[in-house]
Image: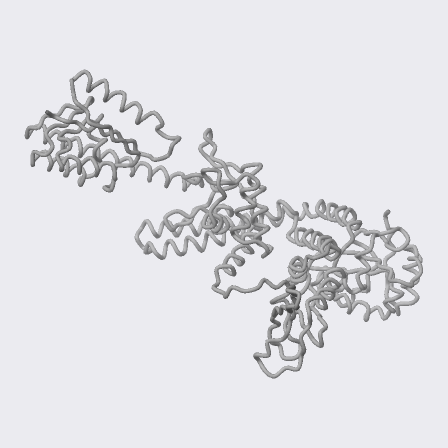
Length: 592
């Protein structure tokens, strides 16, 4: 008696694809067995491709045939059994040895004769040819998609596959979650696990309604797809999708990824560790924790910061965290802006943005010319590669370098289109950072936030005689020069409002080019004016894009404690003409 094993297979293990394939095969095989009076011992199903060997259920079928538990196979078509030469050869060999007596297919004729085996081998060969040809067609289609700037696979987090256009669009909701994840990670205050939990909280999760794996979070944060760069088979392509992650934010995230992956010893997470160096010997300031145990079983924890003394002998003593925290808080507070300043800064930035749109067109044309030059170089490089003048490895290397150059140019162009000029975005970041510094300085029990903000407003922190000092970044030095007066709420009697670009300016005989004022450090301005800071009511700062200096005009009129109310603009101008040793000021009406 011939005993059949019914084998059904579909090519994918995804539940949402080929859903009815297995059920349809089982139904057809049952009807065929009933019509042909075939005895089926069992049904074995599998969801795996037959392109390569290694199917577990198919191996189980062959094992039962060899043991004599069955001696025939029933399947829908020969391509369900094998699409590779190894599995097809095993079936034909079992037919030759007599362990496999028969094969039945509702859609294919077979007899265990030399002619039948020959036709079966042809069917297996056609199945292999189909899958190989399909693979080449898919690869060709993927290469064409990449040339068109379309990612040929599932869209990364923050994007969705558009079934109508066959492209990739920005998800209006999840893209905000992804951008916030990048920002949180760039602030050096979140781990991969914390980012995964944040994404899970706001709707980004993997199959099974589980948080995204840590490895997937790392791949997302390192994926150049968010910069419109498609990396496929080790080669870069220019993407046509929209980007919502800036190049600057992406680079900050990459530095943080490298820092986290750097091997380090596990220990305490001290808030101010790594913030300052010793003012006497220049060594790093480390932290240590001590626990004092009492007889009643309780304990108290103390944290101290001290010099490591690894460079040379040092006489500096330790400082406790409760003693260091107020000093850090004062530095951050003095660099803060009261929230009342925000509308005035926003009003001026908006006016400046409108004016810069006129000059932005000229810069865009220049960048377009540079982008076209880069594209010409890419075309020449491709011609040399096609003419076999350039080796494949050199071609890929040079192509990737040109793509990076082209990306930087397009990033500058996008910044100009969005912000008018490059300096507007740093100006906004400065204002937002100053506003945030004021909030953090007022909050309690936030030492880690204080440390992060301190690194933003300053650098080169030194600890000397238990006192903390810092070199503040410009223009935070301007805010701190008046002893934190800018952190107070603006009022009509004590604070002059923001003025137009022309204001009370010093003489410009030392300027070069088209500049209208002298670029002065905050403290140097007071010396040049030769005015007592306590009586200085008008404070004007000109920031210009020289090297890494900030650009923008900020007019502060900060009244220190113990001074009388600010004079009107005309009186200030007259006082300046008479009392500041010939320094000329331009009278300009202050708008309310």
